[in-house]
Length: 217
Image 1 (tube, helix red, strand yellow):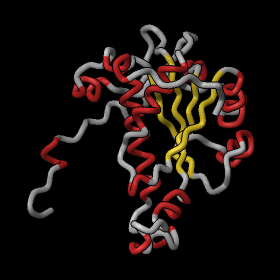
Image 2 (cartoon, helix red, strand yellow; image 1 turned 30 degrees about the vertical axis):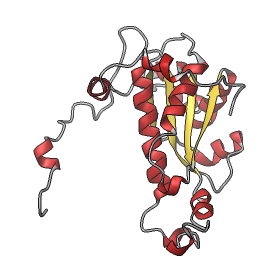
Image 3 (spheres, helix red, strand yellow; image 1 turned 90 degrees about the horizontal axis):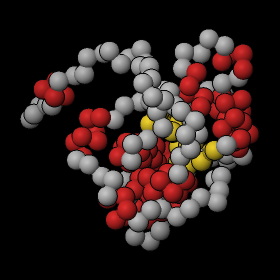
Image 4 (cartoon, one colour; image 1 turned 135 degrees about the horizontal axis):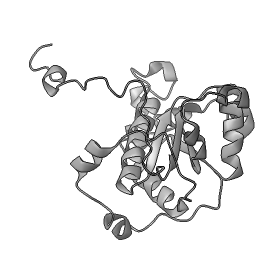
């Protein structure tokens, strides 16, 4: 982690910024244009602290984040989006995001937790292949979504995206091979009047009736 990063804001301080949860969910969007305005590191830390409260199988807590700021964000883009690929890039103001967070998870944390006495009988501590689903990825996804909602609550723009050149990023930032990388989150204050949408934005949202199945499929 780039640091030192300050302690999280108090729960009372964060609560003063809160609005109705439904409003947060409905207003959340992916931001692709950022201004040069700095982001308070304490706000990012507080949002991460909230995200650590997401569900975690056996409280294994395998979620990790790598925070990049200042010159480190340039290092990120130099690896993930080379200067040659930036020519004609559809979202140039994305590269102005003052904070980059790489969301990751550690599968070995689940093996260690489920090898402890109260979980050993499950057999899930023996190998990752024993697990019916990759709960390390599921839990880290829960945490990442909670993080995105927390950022929305404090009026910060964010974009979660799949990066390219994972091998290069691992080498550049010394990310161990056993750590799974979920994706990248660009964070900052949205550029005034600018929020270009991705190609999928105009797709019709499915109705709740098409999502719900009752009694049988």
